[in-house]
Image (tube, rainbow, N blue to C red):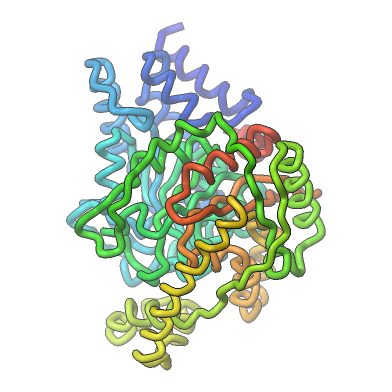
Length: 481
């Protein structure tokens, strides 16, 4: 058998017959050693996109030729000894609100159906510098203004574990893509839970770093005071690798912070000593679906078995949405004035809620945000990590939300209830798989740490991940290609 064919067969076996999902950590080592070709890896991902994307609707734009050219370039560079690091030659997708020079960025809206940026977003520049291969632009809830990803000019994204269910949102296509193996990772955004919720619903890892850790420059805003760039991956280790490539100060982004960037992978194998985990039940554990509640209680028992201290605690949880609504309206006011008919009616109605908020009220909410972000830091004098369910309920059925449109926003607010406060606090937060319902729908566990504490957060999440193995499970869809 020719060498390339042997490599491709081995790669397919990882997906079809392997006991674990292929990860960046695993495949990057093979690429560096020359036992796996970036070109073959990219072809495999593109073949999976061709087969499964018509069902999942995870990608809006697929850059097949561009991706293969990037993979060939990566392969040649590595063969010349110019290895750039663990993302070199790794196929990755981008949420379609992240600007890519020469490739349309639509925000899943008719407003931007043919919008072609002239410059890359800063995160895209950093991915290219790391040698990553860009597969394409991924579907989302229109303008990232929703938690279901069923409102999109290009049609709803569908869950790889059950295509009748929502992916969560707004980074729904990104999570569905990673969950189904249509790429090794994705970059998305999180303003109210838009990375962690779909990651939980699609059975993968979703990391929202500290506000300002990754540059937002070149990414279409929703609420600039709350917008975070984040990552969706198959494992905690892969999240650390992605964060390493993207974190760092950007002088041209007013929200970016000039803080040191540690090596996020160094401490993963060393579980933090005397870890104190705080469990804030009053808000985050109310009205849980029974199977979600059981899975999270089991996760707490796993941590207890790792000899951590479990502390029940009470938190003052921010739920006010004044600033979010005011900033969302301010961002969209020019298009609402010029071409309101190009929004989905539900999106336009959501945005217009912010029209009645005065400048004084918005400014007051902005000052309160700073106080809230300062206050949450004191909680971490008592505990090291906060633990909650990611979402209170499993992913709802798409058909039900289509048939009951008045239920869509209330259901989304329920789904996002546990994630939104962490965007207000601006602290690093991660969702990792912690179980499945009897219907084989994924359940997510949410962990958070203090500002700039991604290294300790990742170590705690990695310890849980390695003690369980939920991250190894694959939807049956992955085995059909």
